Length: 200
Length: 171
Image (cartoon, rainbow over all chains, first blue to last red; front, top):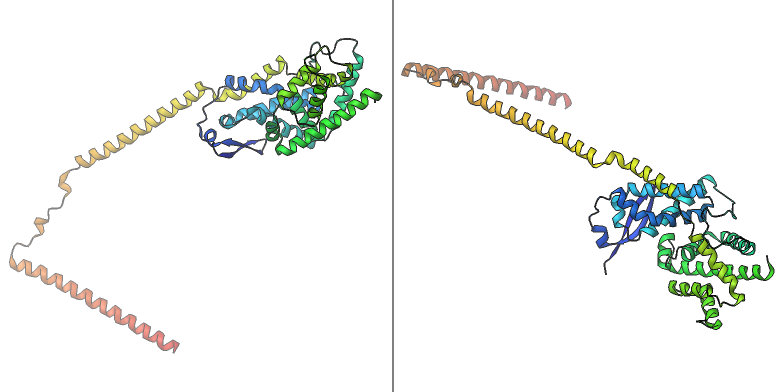
């Protein structure tokens, strides 16, 4: 078992800390080509986009955030090899950037019921307006959850991250993650049953 | 149906309590998507459909084209070709500096070796040739030495007098 140490990467003038193993920290970081970087980052960018969209509710701004964070990360590519979990790291940077935007510009897009840019094929056939209505209500409900609960739920139920990865991404303890997911799902279940029973 | 409603209820309870593992959540999705699912559970199926719908949101090709262009714009100044060019110019600069240094050092060494030996003083020409001349040279040297010593003791006496005066002033 290798001892762990903190890795600090500066992005947007902010220090982002993450623990790495000693072996990883001392490994010589080879120069990464743009192609290699694109290959590694591309699958993560979809997740970054979904997370940014979840926080900002605006597709165009979410794309800008993903590009911005990805380019900033490229500038620090020498340290990229030291990052144990690139996915968690990227989502964390995306979260920080989105929160900065929300704080700096009072950014708010209330297009809560906006359609996704690429709806999943086959999920929403014509005529299923009731199902669409339910989805909109549940989506609105999720957005009304406290931020940490909503983010935790997103990372677990949509991105399929483990509790440990969520804790690392959101800079929370494992127990905080479990409490958040428990509270979020409990609220969703209660409201879901209420909507189904009374249509409210 | 590969599961009982009791099993489904238990798994749902554990899911909403946040106690399920990722593999259990995957199994729950499969159960909720089975065609024999009782209608009372459809709301849970719809909840999981929402997750699936959100998971299907993705970046398009236009984004990746734009990203790759932006990435290459950043890469351009650091291309291997330009780095090689900079290294090559550094190499020639270092070579020129080394040649100049060697040439200067070589010239200096050559000039040292080629300097005429006639510049050295031939002390033999000042050697006294007779005992009388040697005595005269010795006497002159002693007289000069004696004069210097006298001058030195006079100056020392002068300074002692000044100190004495200064002492008397502060008394």
